[in-house]
Image 1 (cartoon, rainbow, N blue to C red):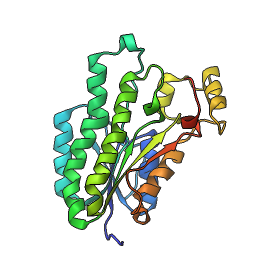
Image 2 (cartoon, rainbow, N blue to C red):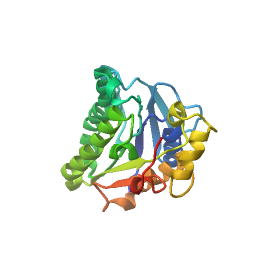
Image 3 (cartoon, helix red, strand yellow):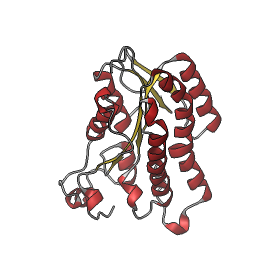
Image 4 (cartoon, rainbow, N blue to C red):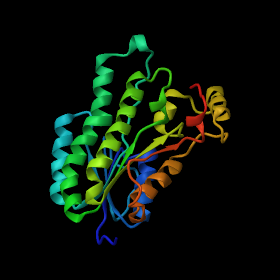
Length: 243
């Protein structure tokens, strides 16, 4: 199916995995709008950005309304994420509330704003970025819970939206060399080397590894693929790793 104008909204598009996703979608000829706390440090004639804190529920609803009213959004990629690692005894209500807002509620608000246009076109692509951590990982109570929630949410949306030509899929990265990864693992440390050695393919992933998976799900040719979870993890989802 040929769509004359493809507009993709990518959360957390200013750096790391999000920036790689934006770049890949731009290479596919799409218009891309990044939603993040800061603007991307790169430019492109078809790239726009909105600075927004996705932890601010009111701000998310406002930018969702603005974009839905001003752009024929055809693609939505919810990539923004935060880890907040803590052992069980130290996990706070605030941690759970914040990550639920970021990973789940903000995705819901933005999707609700964009689906009327997608339904009208009988075409849309939604990709949620979960994590290999959704399968369980030490110190990841809030993160794993909300990332696992994204999988259930995405599969439910896939069923509800399939009849409108809208696909919903989930990409679940393993350890990826990004700012968020290096917030909890020191770059060049023995810990990083040990983790890489424990991954079946023998290396830490790159943002572009995730972007390529997202780009596949976003393609017009992927219309028969929906409700799926793709682990981009170097095989770590079928083994055991310790971070």
